[in-house]
Structures are given as structure tokens and as C-alpha cells.
Length: 105
Image 1 (tube, one colour):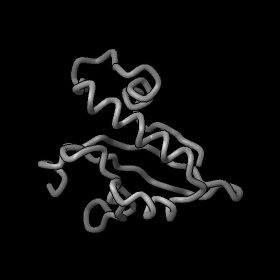
Image 2: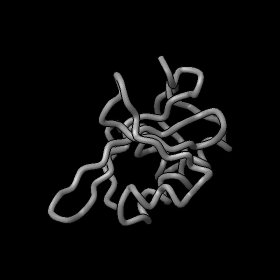
Image 3: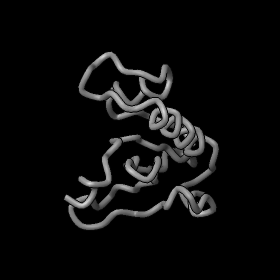
Image 4: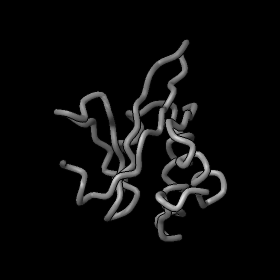
């Protein structure tokens, strides 16, 4: 799938493992798991393949987060994203890394 990052810090975090802003800093273990999760998103042909990775806990969100999908980065963080079809190619828009304690707010 093709990736688009909604916010610059998400792209920086994936490409370099760190961000320029102090607001979006994570532990090195979280960063490496985030990078691994994004690599998995890039490698699958469509979102349905994410069900094969049981550890990701892929889900389609409902309610006020309707239209978003999420996978688990680790036990504490989830990665929220949107998928769209553009000329027979699935595009993933990486939206947010959210702490699970805030996940249901």
C-alpha cells in the first residue's frame, strides 16, 4: 500500500526515528515498534491482510472515530489511519499515534 503521513512528525518518526518537536517524543522501543508497524502497512496489498497479523489487533473504528482504522503499536499505543482506493491502489493515510489510555475518549 502507498503511505501518506497526515502530520510531519509521523513521517519524521518513521524515516529518522525521532522528531524535531518536543511534543511528539516517544521511548526508543515505541519508535522501533512504530517503524515496524508502518513497514507492515506498506507491505500488505490491502487493509484486509492486516487481520493476518494477530499482534496488530487491526480494527475498524466506530462512533466519533468512524472512518478510521487502527492497529496496535505495542501494549500502550495504537496507530490510527485511513485507507482509500486511488486508481486500483490502496493509499494509507497515517493519522495519529495515540496512547491507549486516551483511545476511547
